[in-house]
Picture 1: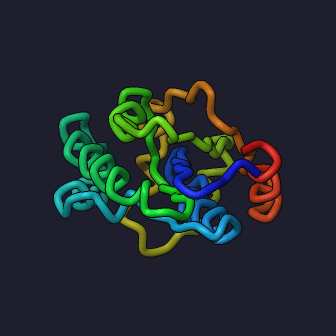
Picture 2 (picture 1 turned 90 degrees about the vertical axis):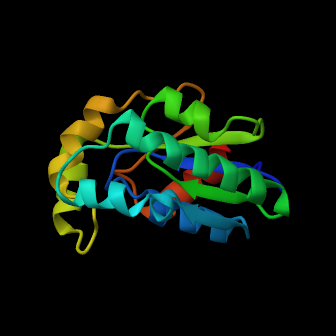
Length: 165
């Protein structure tokens, strides 16, 4: 696994694909740290999503800038850093990693059916299952990402990452 001090990975995909779980496990395996991009959303953005209203690019811009600022502060702090973040569009990914050449994306790829079934089981999350279609509509699959198939177990995903990173 090519995960060293100062490494930065953005674990991305649509809601319900397992970003937080996988980022946390990858960080633990690499003796690193992880952040959840959801923690950086404004209360207004969380309220919109909770009411089933998709965010606009204008809604996302300050959030993406906060993420970039946080990554710039944290990335050089030593241990590998993993950020769980939807990062659905290329322009979002570009904004998140501006000035961070060491950043690599880890794309958690899965079918709408699999992810819909996972969202149906999730409790107490501000992102309702009804917004999944808008997420897939916005998704621009990344180029040059480490792609992990989420139909596999989380342990297999950690192993796959170690092999591919």
